[in-house]
Image (cartoon, rainbow, N blue to C red; front, side, top):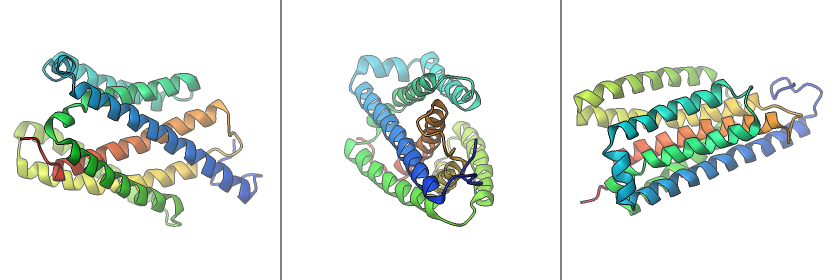
Length: 236
């Protein structure tokens, strides 16, 4: 299979058209995934009989977190072996579980605040993703630095989970905004460069678009959560 970087026997126009078509699918899946997560989170937040089970039962809550991990591993690690239909199912199942877990934000922050931060996050994400798509600058080295920063962020967040330092949490939230904003540009360019040309409409094309959507979905959700933590207005 020929990819975006070597171009193969494909014309430049075909590469441009198929890449644009591929990204429409990536953003489409991502948008649908966000809808599933958002609707699920809001629905659970207005149903005490449901969110009490999730938030006040440690076994259920941690089972959801573990399920998140295994779903991502299944999608990324076994994407070549599973069917396109299963890839789509696992993606939406992951988004559904994310909605269950994040229903807590509707209990902590006002709806108006969530809507405002979501719009700001979407604007930041859109601008950064567009930059990553069109820039001629190779972001590979920049992305490697960001990934190292992400590892450090996760480690520090786990430590602060036990320390419960508000000052550290504030610093980590700002670091997260910077890291996930940068990763949005890097991941967009990486998806563009890894796009498979000549397989449009095939199961491989569908699975690649799902992986791309999952990657950008994670960037957006984490950016949104960090901004919400910094600027969200809490309920009284």
